[in-house]
Length: 383
Image (cartoon, rainbow, N blue to C red; front, top):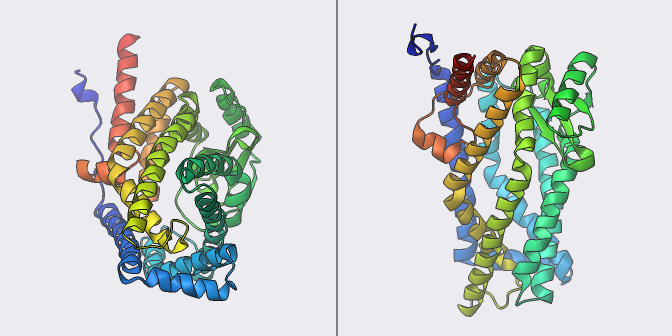
């Protein structure tokens, strides 16, 4: 029998999966367009200056307090403009029976998300404009260093500080599964600080798992939707992929990539701000009415770099898959887990090349399954 004869047929996407993902993409594009139009309207009409003046009146002419109120008004208006799309996204999950969340719970999550965004945003913009005021010539270098420091701190604190705001976690009670996963982590050279059951089923029917945190907050989280529907071998295969990111130092590499991208971003922001002041769009660099301009620069840069960053991410994911193949006894559980995740999460197995390039940070599931099957055949041929 030839190799071609042993290759299982590719499982095609269902019309339902195609339809669901098509709507999700258009929803994401629509949300992006609304945000860009909002920023452009603020800048082209001068309404950003009106918001700044209103913030000064509310903040009793105090710069720091007024900056907070300006950010609040900006985020609040943005939320109001986007709430319709957010609600449509919530209904989309209900329409395709992918969520168990009730409207009140969703609304509460939206409120918490707004407050968390306001708090984190306030820290960032206060530091940003502090550096602009104190060091107008080199602010962008200092702001870049502060941003990267905060980025690393938040990556460490997110599992213990941010994620519990939206989800409930509890230590995994399955001793045998916990032991297997901890041993898997030790073989990968990482010290896992705990294995937690992630109560995702309270809000979603989708399944997921992750290795989160840095240093003392490094932990394994497994969605209960994964634990309850997958075998121990399948869960081990999923986690082996996550550990592959640790083995190949993808977290460190991603931080370095992020540092390079934000360095370019802050340099571009500095150039644009100087140009805007020279053109008398703003009186001075520290006029926080220019915040929409900084956000616009960041958004445009992100859009331009998206294909390259997605390609880099897919390369990392393929490396992590290869580690999973090498670290588990058989690749069959990996293949079955990929197919089950595709069904459970209503993911596309075979998106077009353009869709994969522009929207996917992971290789198509069909490609991942094919890579696992090819690896298994190569192992069989060598034995």
